[in-house]
Every structure is written in C-alpha cells, then in structure tokens.
Image: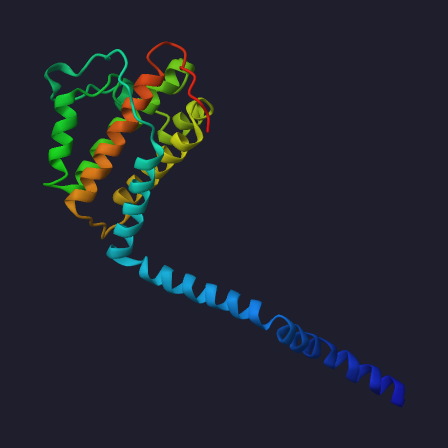
Length: 219
C-alpha cells in the first residue's frame, strides 16, 4: 500500500470523529440544552407512570376539557328517561336514545363520591349516547352501535376546534378509567369529570336540537 493510499485511509477513518468533535465544540450550548430537555422529559415520564401518574394525566385532561368547552345555553329539552331512573337503550344495546334527566345526572354526580371509576364510566355512557344521537341526526343510516369515535367523526366538522379537543380529551380520560387495571383517582376529580362530561352532553343537545346542526363559531 502506497503512502498516499495509507493517508487516504487514515483521513477516511478520522473524518467523522473529527467532524463530531468540531460540531460539539461549535454547538456545545445547544447540545447541552437538548440533552437537558431530554433528561427532564425522561424524568417527567417516570413521574407519570403508576397510579399517581394516571391521576395526573386524568386531571390534566379534565381541566383542559373544562376550559375548552363553551358555556352552554340550554335549548329545548329532549325527552327524559321515565322517572329519571334509567336510560332506555337503543337497538341491540346501542347508546341511549334520549337525553339524560336532571335526576340521573345528579345520581351520577353523587356516585363520584362512592365509586369514582364507576361514575366516570357511567357519565361517558351518556356522552357517548349524545354523540351517537347527534351523528344519527346527520346520518340516519349510521350503524346504531358505531362506538364513540365513528360517531364523533361524523359530527366533528360541525364542532368548534376547542369543543373537538374537549371531546377527545374526555374520551382519552375515560379510556384510562376503563382499561388501566390499577386505575384510581380521588372522588373530587371523578366529580369534575362527570360535570365536564355533562356539559359536553348539553353542548351537543343544544347544537343538534333540530334535524340539522346549528352553526357554531369555529375558533
């Protein structure tokens, strides 16, 4: 091997380490900032695992959803469940086909202080029913049991941006309550979720009081 070839091989072997060292020297401050941000993110993820972390994520979702939902001015009342005791189901166990009564809403609020997880799940059933009713008003041919997200996608274009975000957050929080084995949260946080979900139901009832949706102002 000639001296020229040997030199070329040496330069080729050193070019990347030297380039990296020069880069670190020139951008030392920015690299340190990125590494610190990654470290903080890692520690944050560690803190957000386990029951305490679940509660923190849940609380954040509920707080933001409550802030994003507009003030609701109730429109014409829809038929309430007979006696306010239970909601009739739609075809084949579909979400409830009528709006919840005030009595039922109060019962779920009270349930938050007895069984927080159950209160979250029960209030989401009412929200899912409101979304399904709204979707079927737009598309009468819709499967009566489509689930939350398929129904939500039908009405999503009618909703203001913040309202869309709020409904997605309530759905995500409910998923944690339903699927995380060691899910636990304080009663007051469950109560906040119930009240926020009921506000979302009222919003949907107000927007879809007629066969066609009203026109919200999009943010």
